[in-house]
Image (tube, rainbow over all chains, first blue to last red):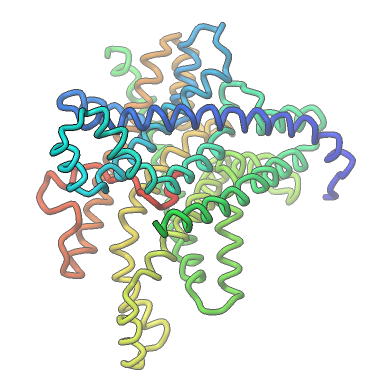
Length: 212
Length: 242
């Protein structure tokens, strides 16, 4: 087995374009996960609706993402691209996780803060927006960061619905040229090239916010 | 409903394969997590470096990429074709084992220092210290996160259908192709996954209780039957997500 460097150079542009799709999906999906998760964490404190939402999220969180992806992809009309479906499903799936992270942050806010907001008779919007959330979110930033990396590592699942992300590209190149070993090994290295530096970055964030 | 009942045997076959993958993967992940987690706590640079490399490499690559590599690239390098199911178990086991190793390392490091000092004072060997004092306490600490990881592992096995394993997801796909009933076919599979997850959560809860009881503590979730069925909290700061 000899590594084919010529092939490596040839395959790189396609693989990098796949990586670019991967990054786009991750970032857009993450934005959905961040905002929807926050919404869910707040709604969970509402009576009746809260437990219901919680149950749905629990179901989403304990079932495989790939099945959800294929399921939703098959149900959506074909005008909606696989990439859009991928972004939305990934975002909703991970919002089940980020909601729990936000929740732990909200529960960590001292009771006195709530009471003070009450005593000042602040409206609910100000209590949440100016008192609770700023304190809660600050504490959970590193944990949220972990889910960005986790999401990035889940994007290869989009192969199942035919999105031209990194692994899909590698499979296409590999089966066209029979250079399977190079194609898949390169994918592994590209993943490491992104996820190890971002893990280091998250660790730094953790140290910075842990001091507060 | 009629549809699902008629095809129950097929789903059960698929679920059985998923359970096999989950148990096999968990066993491998557990051994790897323990081995590399303990290596990571040793006060010498070499074992620590080995543990760090294992953790960073296998945590950094997605389970699906690993699986593809094992199933399609490895045979070309070594000349041996792994059985599909074995490749899937290996991939999820190696991947989740890397997350587990970090959990084990953190749990061992969280054992109060006085406990370790006491074992030194009692002249226990390194192995005795680990087996009799450190691990029983760390064990109770790591179990809740292990509970989350085993669910993640079970979910990760679903991608095995992409390398040709006929698991629950593959059954759902076949069902859809045969009947065109997309919603029922997939919802059935999701329901089975959900049920398996509930059983796993329940089992991990029991283990957690036992570990805490042995240490003379009450588990953080409280006692009683209701606490057993409660879902585990997603870790606020750990990297349990895969």
